[in-house]
Image (tube, rainbow, N blue to C red; front, side):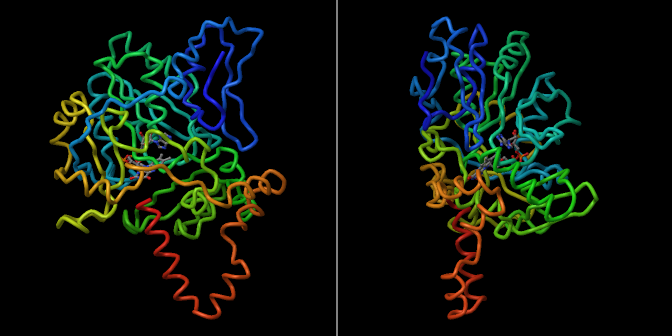
Length: 395
Ligand SMILES: Cc1cc2nc3c(=O)[nH]c(=O)nc-3n(C[C@H](O)[C@H](O)[C@H](O)COP(=O)(O)OP(=O)(O)OC[C@H]3O[C@@H](n4cnc5c(N)ncnc54)[C@H](O)[C@@H]3O)c2cc1C
């Protein structure tokens, strides 16, 4: 049977979920990304895996050509601060849970593996809050979504655009009780590299990492830090520019290969609602409100999305903005991330010597950088690096 070619496969899991004889398993490749493996002894050639694969069928997004755009945030200040952007994901989740529904999203498990899980109560929503950046395992969530829909429950499914495309393709329809929420996506990181990074942090700090938060907003949404907690209660807070893992993410060193040819980094969108950070708000068009704790960019892509967002209005601060402002400040609304020139060498060293050695390739003070620093001075280098990081936010 046919599933997507290696470079195109997004690991959405639609083939794994649809196989009626469990002939498909998701196996880790040498870069640490999951890929479907078909057991030919079990396969009955029914063709369902090819039918539901969004990359084989060239799944096309059906969202509005001109989505309505809002800058928005959750009026619950504590939730806003604990969310990556403005906490609008939690606004939508609260609404669905109040209707007796289920919310699917990505959470860390006890070993810090990122997996999609269902959440049934508001008290559990904290598990899904915050961007994890590592590719999440879908496992059997699509089949679970179908079961809850069959029970007539409302379901909110949130994930990368390719995961949302996978779910819709698996269902073969867009049921009225399902709300899909994608986000503007820079791309997802290798889970194996993340394990390597956690090991490296553990060795450096003589203790195991117990918690990691990539978007600590204590110093502001626009000035977030990476925050890590260790078993011995030690804490590590660092600017994303200085954290080796986040830096590799920003430079697209270990993104999934399909992320660099992503077909969903555009408008129209796949989900009913798209969320992102409203980077650069106010640069073009005046915005006089306090953005310190985070601003979500909300794109309404369907009538269903519009109706549900309308019902959530009283829980949010909302201002309508121009589509061109959103697109100008968030490159992944029009193009995917370009893979780093360090990608191949990184994986070659990583697989032999681990994260610390491999990350030197893109984050170390190489000889050229040392010479340039001596000539122009470290302050100027710092300003250049800051400028490059700010540019990443837009790309
Ligand atoms: C891999 C990745 C890349 C992103 N790239 C960009 C970008 O380039 N530009 C931009 O503006 N925004 C980007 N975002 C989106 C942004 O970081 C916020 O997730 C989004 O704005 C929602 O924020 P929030 O404050 O509403 O809620 P939050 O509570 O912060 O959102 C959490 C939501 O994100 C989902 N999520 C978290 N990690 C993952 C994961 N690994 N896989 C799938 N779903 C996950 C959760 O399930 C939950 O639904 C990215 C997010 C991720 C996970």
